[in-house]
Image (cartoon, rainbow, N blue to C red):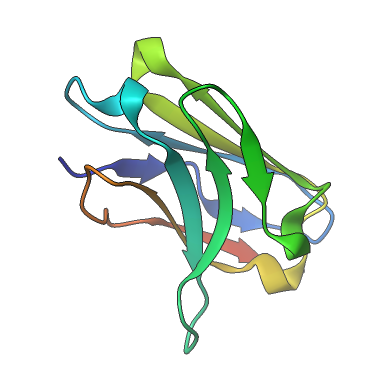
Length: 111
């Protein structure tokens, strides 16, 4: 199955966005879900994980600003992004081991 990411957009530095990622099928609840991002000209990098027991982990650059959560009833994982910086600009993807890469959602942080 292919995740469908949404919620990206243009936001000013210091602003917030909430990304969503929905996946069809019955495998969602057993998957550790992750968010990744890729800036133009750079490699894709890991942002955050949420395991099927709700435990979370974050990359150092986003710790304290981003929050990952999930709703297994809706097959959806979220990424709440606060205090956004220009360095957060990129295409954001969600991923689980049972899923292929989706199209991503563009986040642009600029004044």
